[in-house]
Image (tube, rainbow, N blue to C red; front, side, top):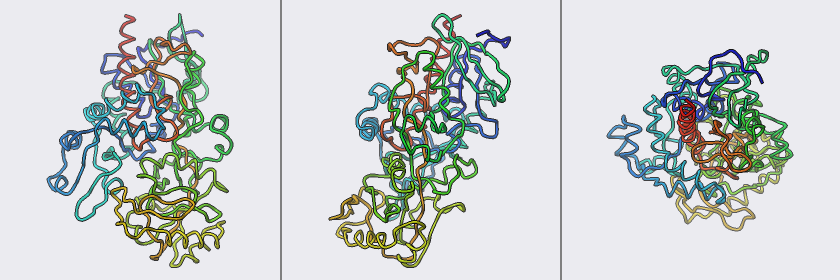
Length: 501
């Protein structure tokens, strides 16, 4: 390829979500000139990050560390809240457990050990954090108790996060090019030397540079790749986020010799409103998700339950239950609740564009649930009600052990007989968030080739990194992983570029 006339940039970052912008900020801090290439137009910028709720998992030992990140906590907040602690060993064990102990131990240790310091660093760039009251802590006996190792979210959610990071990038003099699709890496003498870019779908340009950070997400928006790697039926899944995550960065890296890595047949996939659009809607954001299923039951079109809704806190099950929904007839399931628990449902159940049935009797509810075997559903609810252990107290803040007995699939926690009208049912399908397969990196975010050697000048971070998540993931760890490895990638890319003189 011929290098264009554009002035050489020390570091190019491909992508413009959380991981990419953290990389850009870290590279600029280290003294490099930085160009960010964003495939999307400006009004759709931010990758998958813009569609998230903004929760971030991190290790902490005391409330004092929480106060470092949320200095405006009031005395009353502290008096009525049990923040507990989430030490590094607990985060590491959760990550290992839900990935069935396949997570790369070195990358996992890096993610866990640098999580708190990375959030402090983000705060220094203007990111504001706040406790996730209502979604991660319920008020019981006058006190909030956080559960599931997840306590803070970014103010303004994912949209607030990307807006803050873009503002910080602009303050630091980082150039951002929109509608700029990176399609190839320029390699020279075995190292990265530039990026071939197509502007606005027409103009081709080769931009020389000293280092490239690939941070352009997974391949969840690529229907053909989903079907090829995740399997039959995945072409029917809805995409929760960006329509632009086509796997371009992964393909570019592999073409340059990178080692494909991680679980290419795995993905983060959740229960998503059945009538949501094919791709994410920035106005609705993450409102199409439906994550309060532990307090009710999930049934398929046959009227049968098919998972243990209370197997664990939703933080540890929601990212894998989307796959289970996709396997059901018609790729549809219904979440059913009664009035004993509807006050616990997250805000996403109250959006205007929701697929909902409400009734005062179970029979009426069943008639309103299109396509469901009504007789079997009524029998399922009756069998469930009869099996609930009433000798245990219901407590939404703990794994309360209030389960069922004698069912083919027992519910382990938070079981209540569905007897108190009005009853509500929500239609959900599979919404894919991001894919788990990608390229291999080391703990310095350097991309490795098929001989396990570093590809000089090539770095990666975010959802296109393989080897961290398998089968499942602990809620909130995706954004944290992007931030941790994005910060590392930016710093190491700048250092590499500086070493070239």
